[in-house]
Image: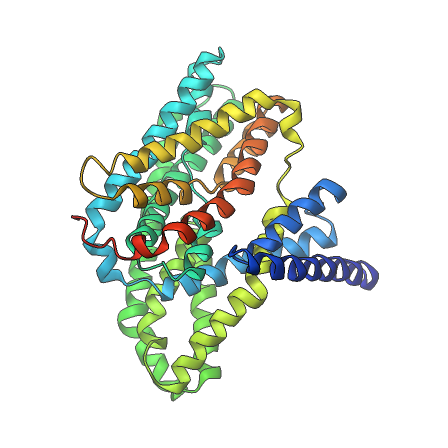
Length: 413
């Protein structure tokens, strides 16, 4: 990368962030989280300039900063999660995760079958209706101060459990593609079982490392900092990159790694001492003043709504299967006495954030020739439509029912 290319990329990012700053000031006046301004500016830039080439300087820089944004935002959210309160809702979260994955899957599977696609391909497309990009909506919960409400715990808890489904989805897709490319040499079931066992083993190793860091390593290292904010922030950064990288290596993903890092670091940086308060403030400023806008700008530049024109009904059908499937999945908690109607609606909308694993799987299937350009375009467009509608709609719901959602803690769990 030449100095001219690097400078040009930085200038374009500066221009887009400057526009997002102006748009965010307008958003503030209508009670929409200003961090979403970067999302819409990025989407507008995609329509005007197209998607940045990932191998070009702009794509490389924005992609790296976007990934760091995911880590930093979710580190902050993890610091605000109370594991004891989350465990009190464990049964509710598991039940929600089951409904939140099974119902959209059945809707997507049935939709593709009705259009005449094969059972196996319909199974995969149905599975792409299940994942949630909780990283997109959790910052909105944070801006409204609702991370530790029941809705916040539903979205974070179900989103994290949902990541396990995403891992299985990517593993199955990758193995299927490898088996297809190699002909019939090898059992698909055996290969999938082997990869899933690897992921489970890696997850267990990650859990052991995280627990050791929480119980022994971080408390010991924290004594070396003598409560100084700079040293505590550096220790937090080392932990974030170490656990985030380890989670990615064992197949759990950055989302799980960053959230767990926040939870693990909570005893180390929590408390009323000036040094610890300074670290929390620094992480907050970094998340919402720098990394957060870059993350949403990166997501927005990836959204191609023009694809709706090429396969509108297919894209709308795939979008509807996921959107209404997740709404219904969350709504099923109401008859079980696990959530109020307002909580179910807010949770269902929040869990509809997209544009993560389903795009990865779609790209894998397209590259292997298993799906055609029309299905790929429809999958991307459906995710883009969710990215366009869900964050502002979620913000409106939280703004409208925020007080009642905060006080809805008496629902049985």
